[in-house]
Image 1 (cartoon, rainbow, N blue to C red):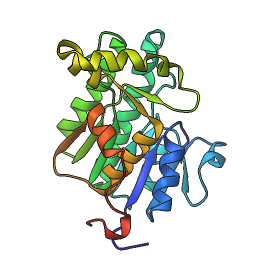
Image 2: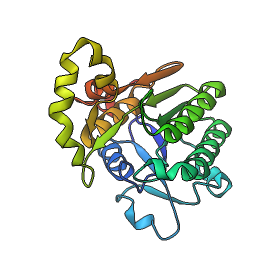
Image 3: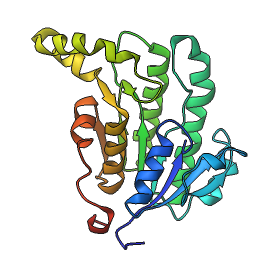
Length: 230
């Protein structure tokens, strides 16, 4: 490992974004530990250190977070929809609270949280839980990056491509431009690149990456781990 590489712990490492993020970080010379349920460790890319535990019970993995300097929280109910309001509060919120408590106890220097774009006219229960998590993160005092996509286009998640002409039109109209940009679509590749950039370039305080910033940061990570600042 380079002296400038990161020790990264990822909760949600076997999921939609987790697997790709683990692979990219390993390629760039970082050490990665990935939280996986028993029997799911085979989903982790080769080279990732498997941490077997339950995302809803941080006691099952807390001892294995050190020596991580970066904690990435990707845990959440898959395929969010208004019908899953109860699941957001039963899964997303306690999983986040456990991750945040564990990161603080482990002395993590940078917490990365994938939230959701807001305000928005739909998905109110989902947004409410994510905003609550953001509030808890700010109150913790941990340096953090909060990433706020609306919808991430990728394998199995492509139907909103049909809306791209409408998005283009709304972005041309001054009255609707800000909302269309804030609730715009980002690609899976842009999200992974933006998360890698967040890992490699932590800032002080709390940094927000909305959709325009995800697209910009997702163009290409600024530097490889070997030349990243410590």
